[in-house]
Amino acid sequence: MADFFAEYGLFLAKSLTFLLVALVLLSAMAGLALRNRRGAPEGSIEVKRLNDRFDDLRLSVQSAVLDDASFKKQQKAEKKARKARDKKGAGDDRERPRAFVLDFLGDIEASAVEALREEVSAVLLEAREGDEVVLRLESPGGMVHSYGFAASQVERLRAKEGLTVTVCVDRVAASGGYLMAALGHRILAAPFAILGSIGVVAQVPNVHRLLKKNDVDVEVLTAGEYKRTLTVLGENTEQGRRKFVEELEDVHRLFKASVQAARPSLSVEAVATGESWFGTDALARGLCDHLETSDSYLLRRADDAELFEVRWSVPQSPLDRFLQGAQGTVNRALEGALNRVLNRSSWLR
Image (cartoon, rainbow, N blue to C red; front, side, top):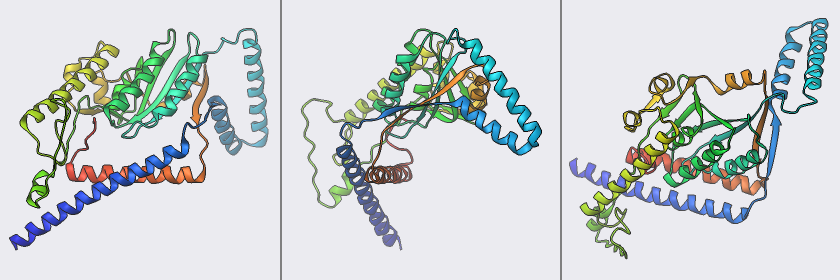
């Protein structure tokens, strides 16, 4: 029976290894095909006035709950109020403040940064003193360099004189996601949103002993002492492990320095343990500034400001959508498989 379980375990390990390799190849092929079809995609900025959407919602409810006479009276009153407001602001288009609303839904590669960079450029071209950018952010983190670049886009907004950046976290802004969120002038979080995870993790599977047992040799040739530290197929050394950990510590140091510079009142060392906290506890630790959902905040702002949702849109053919869907499916399957096999993925989390 012991031999059976040993053989079964070896078979399972081999199967999972081949599955991971296949998923990596499929993901690479789908991504390559998608990039080749896109080339340098032409897109455009779409701007929608959120005040109009809120007005439509209010109108729909009023038409349902009020009788005809009351509904017409209410409509007349609102129309009169709008005319008075427009007349008041006709001589000075800066009468009502403006807020530009952006969205960032992060994945492992922070692929939404391609749209974010265009949206940020569009806002910066129009933004004036006293304007606000509301970034609705959701991300559990991902690759270091990708989220570093995404955070740089938020830094571009923050660097604009007279522009206020408000980051809203309704669900999660952890690790690379929090690296982005920390660069806002203030962070609003839902009570059960997850924030923090100021840490770095990287796990690398190694099948060297399995290959050696089956008489498979793998040669890893490098030029440069630390060109390769840990490998998947080759034999890892203590020197390589020490260097790998040193590199992780360097990333962690940069992570902490960035958060500390953006939020000087935060006790970074106390929260840079890799832990994450729900909104209420995050507020107590200084990771956010107020507990509120983005919906609640925007509804309040709509009372005294013009809200504009800014989005970068790239036209897609049916084949592009299929390839993008296939890549997303493979990426999710790959991440799930890695999480199950390795407990944690090999990205900044």
